[in-house]
Image (cartoon, rainbow over all chains, first blue to last red; front, side, top):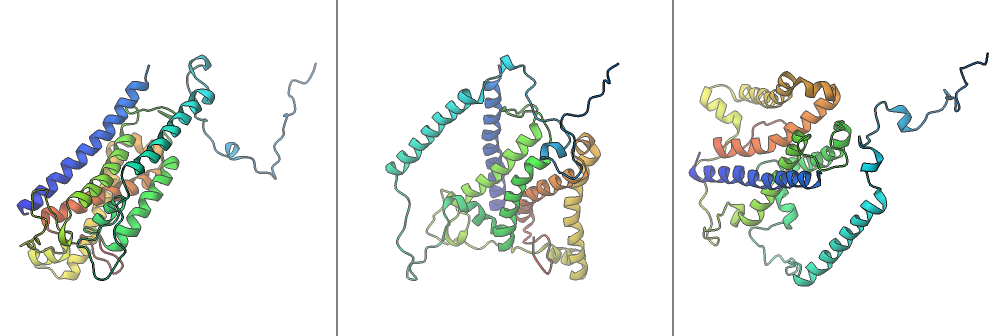
Length: 36
Length: 276
């Protein structure tokens, strides 16, 4: 495994996690703001 | 004394079929709240939806006025841009072509995404959280959907911002006008790697790759069955297997990407019909 591949792999994992975090965060925020 | 058993008001005709609601067993989804705690769809909901529609329309009209469509010159054999990129919303699919056969990346996987989304209402029989934004009661569903959506967008991000000449990977700080050197380690098929490492015939290695791919799906199907039996019991045999098939196929995409990056594996499985 080359250093470049490691960087790419890390980028993909972190990037997917961040985007997923935004969507899940939105889901949690929506739930909270609509709950009484 | 009067007869207490009345004839049914609308007797069933055995020769007729009745509506779908009559045929399908189960409870209709309904709110557990009393009427005084609910609001009407009209005007309470539809009014807000109408305002949202107006806002969306205004945004859609103003946006193209502010920024033009990125149209280029007419196609010509004299100018062949490198790399040739699809519109941004298709770049995720174009990026998948790096990792999968064209007909898998371009036809089967997008097809499965569409079919998979279409079967969600039939697979998902969990009545929790209907008609409301709900994360706490629907963790698995929300997380799975968000993961799939994140996968879709990360490939678009890569395609738009990180692919340069010859579809090579370019970081923003790289020189984008220089061709990248080909990687020193060549990509190899899993069966070739196995036959070289363990000194077995390639046909035997090929058969083993079927087993490995089968094991990927097999483990995915078995683990929830063994450790989250409630899940299987709630869904039933057909729904469970359908859902796990779509789920594991979605997971196959990051799995394939990672084994390619980590082990330099070009194809996990080679069949006469397709390569994964």
